[in-house]
Length: 87
Image (cartoon, rainbow, N blue to C red; front, top):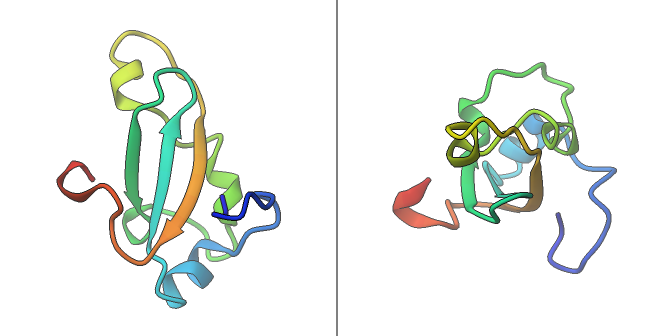
């Protein structure tokens, strides 16, 4: 999830990321490689949920329409949406 290739675990909690100004998470579908930006503030979560715990919960909408449910690859936290209008 880091740009330097560091490990995903440990990661900050969702609240820590938002409070630090990193409210967007860039993910990619592990099946079709479609990138997506997720607004962390819009996700329902417990205060202690870590960002790396989202990998198994976030799914690709494109693959979901054809009956697949691959887990997301977590790429990086961002201060603004990295994908522009597609977020």
